[in-house]
Image (cartoon, rainbow, N blue to C red; front, side, top):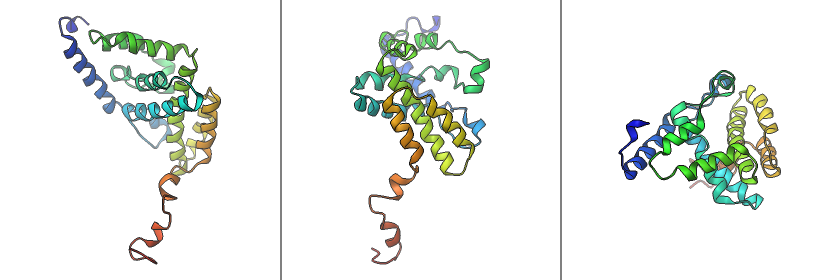
Length: 204
């Protein structure tokens, strides 16, 4: 990364922010095999971080560390792109090297690479929770596609359930399988609204 030499720390931090922004333009590629659904890596990383935060609270684990591992777990894909399960058979990316280059000169490298190392080793509870959060986000997408009629999503969902590592993750995984993806808005907070809308009985 010779071209990065001589750039000040604040400039390199702005470079880093711009690099993170690439995740909004980086598609997750597995959906091309599923046939339906789509998302970018930034969308995936956001909900994964939310799930990791909640899992850590449930497990009594370090919430911040778990959340940060989730937040940065796919940062390298700003440079490599997303490798789906089929692509992984044939392609390998130097993910640690990518993170070293991305954080060089920012002062952020030690912390972010520390989260990455912990996540990859998967020896701590927090790392296992972060790994589960990654799978649970994927499962939520698969359940939505299954509810919308893609029967193949059910096969993928069965496989994803088996990859969950912790008891808290397994409890949530089973609940995802059992819950219609639209219930949160269709059933509440006032289900009668659907009958009252547009001049229905007691409509407003």
